[in-house]
Image (cartoon, rainbow, N blue to C red):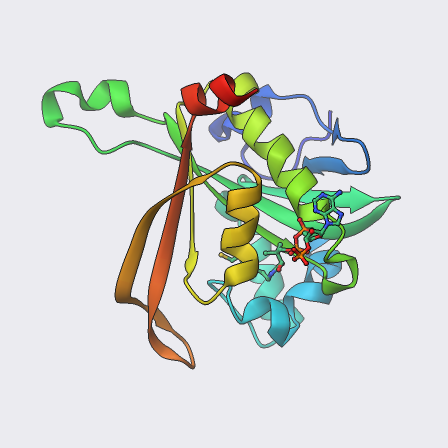
Length: 199
Ligand SMILES: CC(C)(COP(=O)(O)OP(=O)(O)OC[C@H]1O[C@@H](n2cnc3c(N)ncnc32)[C@H](O)[C@@H]1OP(=O)(O)O)[C@@H](O)C(=O)NCCC(=O)NCCS
């Protein structure tokens, strides 16, 4: 098993065996040298237009990528030995009333993704995210996964729908985009029992 610099004891991903293989892809926990490979596409405006961060330089990008908290929730997607994308799996507590809050700790995850545009349109993101969802429910035993995006990021919410996620939110001008101002948002989710029922 490949153990990244991230404090492995803190990440639930440390309980899993890496890499994970799908029909066409290999998914593994990110390591610091993956900064360069992921920067190749994350530096592109077509990709970072929708992402939380758009660092101006590789150095600034690397500083965040290599942060142990960030690495602990980052996976990379390889095709034939080349990094073509990355995934985020961020464990969260569910909202709960105080008396039962302990039972709601770490029961769900927010998911995220980015794919090199050279590899878009071939179902690779779908294949990788389907595996990530399986891993969240079967291997990590989570009860719910979520994902959010700007409403205008149609490629992203269509991906959520392809992997079986359900639209729960369409917010109105509540998300601030760095150049486009206040935009609508989309929120999707999938429960473990919904996912199991469909299999
Ligand atoms: C979101 C993102 C990962 C989606 O990428 P994508 O290429 O559309 O998704 P996939 O790799 O699953 O490919 C799906 C497409 O391939 C087609 N396809 C071909 N073979 C396929 C297969 N075997 N399985 C599924 N789809 C297949 C699908 O029909 C679909 O095409 P369409 O868009 O014309 O309908 C990509 O647009 C991206 O990285 N965007 C920038 C970063 C970003 O926005 N991240 C999310 C922030 S919230």
